[in-house]
Image (cartoon, rainbow, N blue to C red):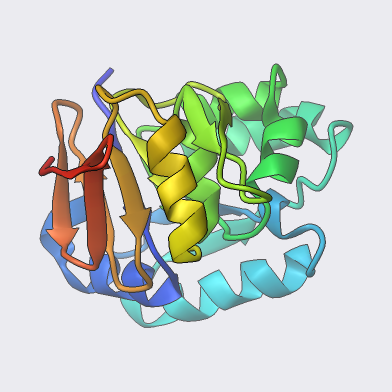
Length: 207
């Protein structure tokens, strides 16, 4: 099954994607589920509500799935909703917490199989086979849901340099700025809104 995956740097990036109806092709009344797992340390209800506020002007039906831990990541209803949704939105927050909760769980598999998946902010890092540890910028193991790219949130020049030094040179590293939007339509990744920096090793690159 073909899928569309979008990574945005912030909720403003989500707003721009929804405003451009050609990117996700959501009809009025489309079913959106929000997974706020990564925001567990700052408040999953608040994170889900913030996404719902962005979606409100676009006539979308929004439901938050309160997946905060591995116990809730096995809830059959959540898995069912992920499978039925027109769009799955992953909230910003801690990619390490999201990885711990989703790895080898039914909810994690539901996210992996989503036909339209949108990740906000640093949680995009967890999608690839390689992810960037935000605590120091070193590559580590991601969930492997999406291939061909490694996402990282903006960081200090020193940390970004360390990440580039440690990254395999053949992998594209994409640092998502707040307005940045990167999309994969099932065939290839491309930059939609150019608030991103793409590198392979220490060299600037294009997707």
